[in-house]
Length: 199
Image (cartoon, rainbow, N blue to C red; front, side, top):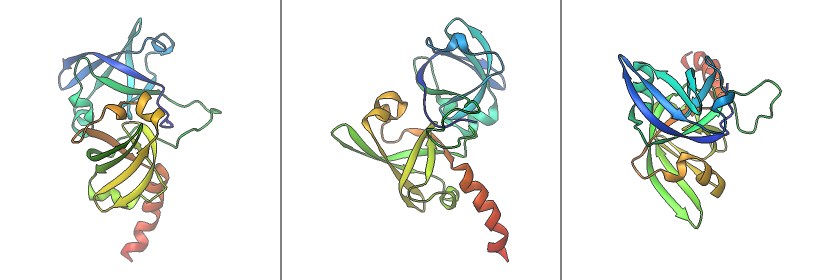
């Protein structure tokens, strides 16, 4: 379980073919030594398992399902990703409950920059709309954000200067693809009322 509060930007050192998946090699100098094999980290909001640690380098295996349902299949050497370690029991929950299980890939539809603040509009599958509400939460590439406006196939968020500076979202251009995870609590509510809708 994660909170959507990105700890650092990790650098993609290498992407290796490991059929039918890929091995991702990331550099995280400040914390790699603290990570252990078998530990779960959120990489762009996708929960992956550390399979090797070598100095400041961390290695992860991404299978075909992960590569097809997230933007991790687009990573290449020299890229940058959002990194967060799993939350510990007793830690403050600064964002919201994030499982690291990506629901869909969205696309940046419009970016309105005003000084060092920004409003982003994202396209998303219509099927996610029932799990979104204005002032609710969403994780975008692992970043916990508050929904502003929600339309049938797109939504908006507002980004403060800090978020733009310390996550990959500040570098995102129109057309860029992001991992989306809707609020876990919204999923449970939808599941609970679904039988009522059909009756």
